[in-house]
Image 1 (cartoon, rainbow, N blue to C red):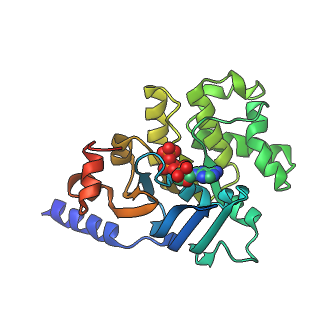
Image 2 (cartoon, rainbow, N blue to C red):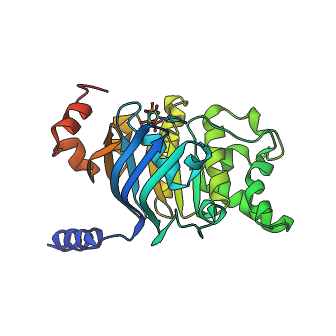
Length: 268
Ligand SMILES: Nc1ncnc2c1ncn2[C@@H]1O[C@H](COP(=O)(O)OP(=O)(O)OP(=O)(O)O)[C@@H](O)[C@H]1O
């Protein structure tokens, strides 16, 4: 009896709709004449992991690079529609991209630490934000490295060059660097595709931990990974979102035939 009540309560708590962090409404994006994103509608909820899956060239990276407006670095890019971040359209002329990027961190496919010490990699962002106090910086370094499950491995070598770390450690350092600016959202573009299976597992476990404090959007080619670590999954195809649902549903009972064909390996 007690178990039933507990389960009910758990379901009720889980049933509460989490707040929307990013709400994409009718987003289109063109690179010159290439229509790369077509009428995307997608709500991203807080403290969840949202996986973006789909075959090569379907617009996954473009979509996540649009969320922090990185895609604007390509001169031929044009967009229409809206992406609301915490209720405000990020394409508004008055929206400062620097403000957006202090809220939204990004981790890339290939670990890309700066050619500096582990310590300096972490303090780089906070220093840009004006933090100079050594004690405060030391605390940020420890907290960020602990948050990225790397502290125990590197605490004795903080002033050594980050390039001396393994690939998996470098990727966790990049995650720690992201945490140091205390973001709200973390975007991850295939963060484990360059890593060995053990490092991949570590990053996957870390993502599960981090979602307690952050909202995470992860592009992955690895469907087992999406199934293992995400709460929601969006399946992209030819620049469109074919299906977006609870991850369990996408992988056990997809609505669209194209989703089923993709997850069962019939194409892609
Ligand atoms: N800088 C660019 N200039 C022109 N076209 C681009 C550019 N970047 C991407 N594209 C095009 O936009 C479309 C979507 O590409 P995108 O990289 O977003 O796909 P993806 O799903 O992330 O692919 P992959 O899984 O291979 O990384 C493709 O047709 C691609 O050729």
